[in-house]
Image 1 (cartoon, rainbow, N blue to C red):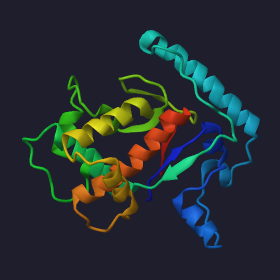
Image 2: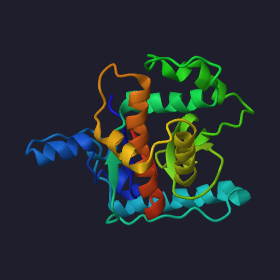
Image 3: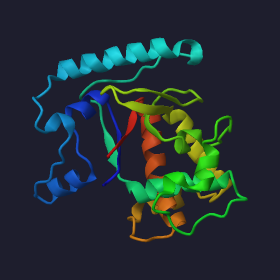
Amino acid sequence: MALDVYVGSLTRYYAGEWENVSERTARERGTQFRIGRRVASDEPDLDIQEILQAILTWRVELNQSLGDRIASPLDWSEDLDAPYYTGRPGWDGFGSLVLWAAYAEHPAVRRPASLPEEWDNDPALVRSNVAGFRSRYSHLVRNVELWLPNPFDFTFEGEDVDGRRVVVGSTATLRRQLEELNAATWKADAEIVAAWGRDALADNAPLEQNARYAFAVLLDLAERSVELKLPMKLDH
């Protein structure tokens, strides 16, 4: 299953008014390709205003539940015409980046050469998620699925707009943690990182190569999320 990352209004996301990487490529080639998103499948068409109102209500409830844990209320554009961006780190790339971060803070544990099949049970990643451990890369290694463009240091579990339980983080913190991961390991400049993002994922590639590709994809999208004040979400 493919893994895409979406940056844009949640109204556009849940309305299905966006293209992932495969859809955009197919359109540019003049062929048809459409995945079965919830709101674009067999379910009745949802009214955009109903979707917008559901998201605004969800955001109000989220602000109320967080209370004084956040310095200022969560807020971002929910304009359907707001720009959106997508990238495809793939599960191999994303998993490799998560493990790269986990091993960076547990250097005594031997890092695998390639991504294990069940990487979510990796010993270094398990250590990074032990209760009480203060991970330097918490917004990457803590199974986050939704990042909001507001600055807060903690991650939390709650319901998303669909009522699913998800872990939520901050793109402002994710961007900082990605930059710190680069400074602690690769020390790559912007030109090198951009080159990593132009190299497509390869089957059975080394863990570090896949991690570099996913790093370039996620850093670019996190920067867009922060600069444009738009949420960032995994799509799979």
